[in-house]
Length: 236
Image 1 (cartoon, helix red, strand yellow):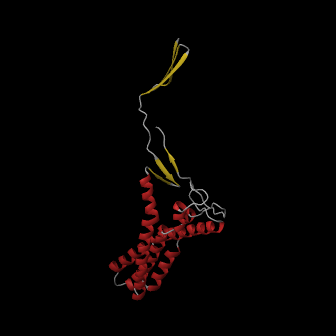
Image 2 (cartoon, helix red, strand yellow):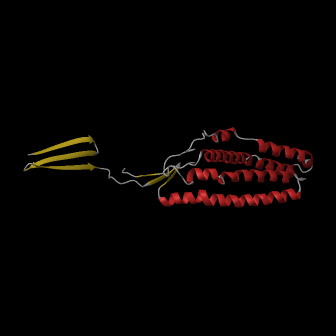
Image 3 (tube, helix red, strand yellow):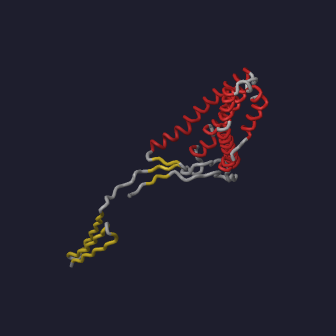
């Protein structure tokens, strides 16, 4: 006895099932025909908010976040500190020195974003309780300290980004006045006005950046946790 059943689900996909009985021994054959070839998808690696197509890409991201960026930022911080000393020794009798001094301070604030050790530990730090999860997984006090440190570094870093967009505008205006109004330049651009403008730009903070740094910090055992590190694969 042979029975053939054809089931059409979609115009481009047909499932053919044939059931054959020979000498009381059932034989089942299932065939799947499709116009589109079935190919496996690429393996994707996920770590917190990061996604990579290969383990090498994930290790490259780890190296950049944990080693390259902090080292370059540290070198930049040292160079900027030397610039601050030089500008201070040369004096602030020139308006340009005051503006450059404020710009270097803003640059140092920006460098704290990539030197944020709390953020590095948050993503790539050693885990104690749940190895498959990233985040602060230490005791309650250390978790809270790392969470506040992460937020402070991000706050100061984004603050520096906002200031970095304002001081170059002041420097441009100062140079334009020096070129187009050379006779009135000293009366318009005074030391007091330049200092006030620089301080005003330093205390200016974008509210959107402030809102982006708000975290829900709770002093629990796990601290802040992200998505687990997992390997996903399948078929298209």
